[in-house]
Structure formats: C-alpha cells, structure tokens
Length: 351
Image (cartoon, rainbow, N blue to C red):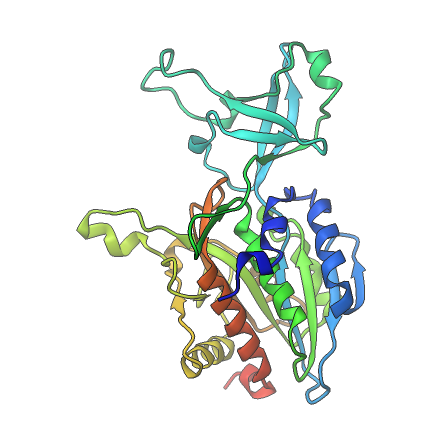
C-alpha cells in the first residue's frame, strides 16, 4: 500500500483552491511534475497541460485528467458590522455550515460561519447560506474592508490527518486525490504511447476547464480520475441498497454512467478486465446517485472522444471532513497504470 507520506496528497488537499482560484494548488503540482514531463504549460483557463513521453511503441494519444479545484465560497458583500456575505462556489449543503471554521482570502484569515444559537432558533428556521454570514472578528465594515475584498474565496479550515493505518480524513479529496494519483502515474514507468496530462480548473462549477482540452490536445481517448460519493451510514433494511453508491476499502470505482456521460463500452470493459486479470479490488458506481465529471464535457469534444471515469470512494464529499482509504488510492494507481500499459487502438473501436 502506498503511504500518505509518500504522496503529495496531504499538501495538495491542505492547499486552498476554490474554483477560479487554484493558484496555490497549481504551483505545487507544477513544481513536482516538472522533472517527469515535457511541454509543460499553463493555458489561458489555468489548466496545467503536459506530456509524459512514451516508449514509441504506439502512436495513440491518451489523455489522463484530474481537476484541481474544490468547492468553497466567495465573498459577495460586507455588512455594516463587518460580517461577510457569501455565496457558495460549487455544491455545498448549507446544513453543515453553522459554526464551521473557514479561511478567507489569500491571507487565509480565520473565520466562522455564524448562525443563531439553539436558544434563539425556532424549529421552522431554514438553514440557508443567504441567512448566514462569515465572522472574521471585524467590528465594522471598514475594518473588514481593510482585510477582505469582494470576490475573495473562502475555504474550509481543515487539515489532512490519518485516522488509522489506512483511512485518512481531510478536505478537498475531490479531486486532490485524483491529482495525487495522476502525479504517481506520471512518476512511474513510461507507457507505449505519449501520455497527455491535464490538471483542470473549475470542474465544480460546470466542467469549465475541461471544455478546452479536446481542441487543445486532440486525444484518442480520455481517462478522468475522480473522487466519488460513498455513503455507509446505517439505513433501514428497505433502503440499504439504495443509498450505498460505493464502499470505502472496496477498491477504485469504474463508472458506467453518471449525470453527464456514459462510459465508452470498450474502455469500461478494458478497465474491468484489467482489474480482474491483476486481482485489483474494484467496484461499480450506482448511476442514479452519481454526479458529473470532466468526462461529461471531454467526451463531446471535437468529433467525440472515448472517455472513462475512474474514481476513489470518499465519505462526506464536499465537506471539511472527507474520509477515504489509502488502500483504494493505491489500487487506483495500480489499476490505471496497468490499464494504460495494455491499452491499444482496438479497445477504442465501436463494433
């Protein structure tokens, strides 16, 4: 099993990178992949693009992508008492927010989501981000304005920790776990073909960074590395099978359909057969509960690009306390490496 300390996952997940403000994450990735890639560049969207040279045995052009951004918030106003008005950036359940600690702006000012104490709450009070503020301790609007600007991003104040030898907890594993996987793949042995690498921006607000990849890179196929929902809280027997989606520790998730795409049948079969042939634990995602991924926009690019999403299961997605398994991470890296080494043009054919 790959250890957390042997990867870039903790520094990546601890970094701030709300959609449209991925700078800190981007700098970290560029620094660590530079020795292993060629043609490294940052496009006008902010995506990192690079090429890992292959052995030359195949002329396929295969893209592997993971998104850098995380869900969070943006400052949209400042009240007269110095409280910050905010809007969510990406999907966040407002019910988790009261009393949560956050970091505001590039200075990472400490803040707290404020909400009426239980003594003042009525049972019918609606928990809505429009009814909340972020408290940075300012006593006036001018005091807050001296430290915060409209448009500043706000991230969860949470650091990655090891719960035990296998399970870790932290924010932004969606999709810094995919980014860390991709870095491990880049650092490994070359593939028969040149591997096109993309770390994308703004996935959480509409797959925006990935929308330019098809035209920019013109790949023959695309593999998207993601983190997907895992819900294992005990349920009534009649609902148990309806809410699980995926399970922690049961291996990487091979997607066959989500809200934005249906996996290419040849790629799905190839990844499944690769997992079975190599004894790699794996699972399939329940499509009715799945969100979307960058594959949703990539597969519709140019004249169509065969695409497949491979995800890691994570409990409590889009919160400060996502939990995931390093065994799943290790098996995810193993599966993608093995599948890429044996990927050939006939896998991509439509019969």
